[in-house]
Length: 112
Length: 114
Image 1 (cartoon, each protein chain N blue to C red):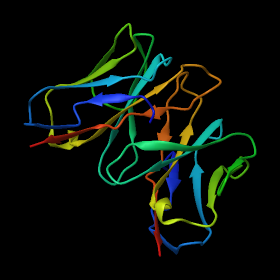
Image 2: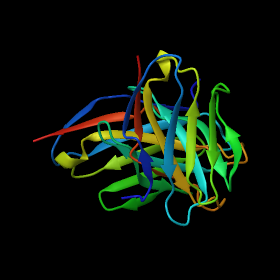
Image 3: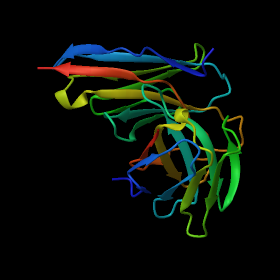
């Protein structure tokens, strides 16, 4: 089983739609969770950190469910500029150092 | 912009050659991590340097090695290049505290091995 699993998509949605991505992780001791955004052939950029029960930043809401070991990202009122790959990222916390484990990413395509 | 820089941006090498990639961390960050991202995959952790010492390594062979300098910049060296080493190599800097695991990535070096 992969440490972090995501649906690769693509998710095709119209502008203004609400879209949600889920991600599951295998290490129950994990404490730190993130969503990164990656545009084609560019570096990943930190979108949100997800701590405790989740958090919200404008149109973006991240939720954490420790019991089921999954993280979600909700995007409301999708914009064309939201088209990108969204990477679910976990720090396993059992390594003694800051290692990030990435999912393969979920591709989002927002159309006019 | 994250303030993390990498050089070169692109590189083409032949199988069997050696390559050195460079990274400058964000001001105030003492930890640099290196990742390899193959096409269509998420980044894979190679190793991490904290205050000039390697303090963690992923599942990469010893021909992947690195250094960190007193100014916290870092190098990734790959010997005996193989075709499968073709990938985007990313470095990420962080502040090394256990209260904050956020890492900020540089633009990457795209390595092609022929």
